Length: 62
Image (cartoon, rainbow, N blue to C red; front, side, top):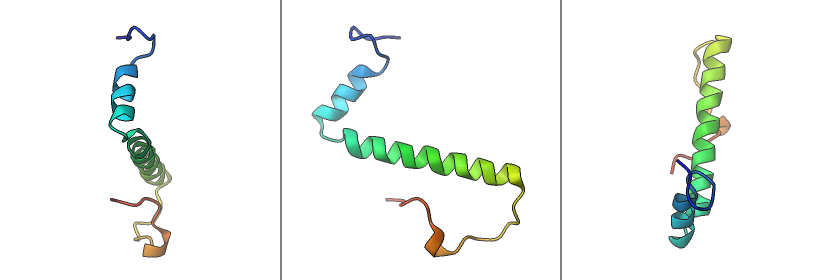
């Protein structure tokens, strides 16, 4: 589904900008996607199941 502006989701982006949450929402979404991709890559590489040290945390879970 495309909006009058021609891009899917444009109204949602406009809404987030109006609410002044676009930047933080986008940042959180990117972090979640990267964390998911990293966890999937780790699964496929069959790394030993040891916990990463706390200093190696990649994502801030706010």
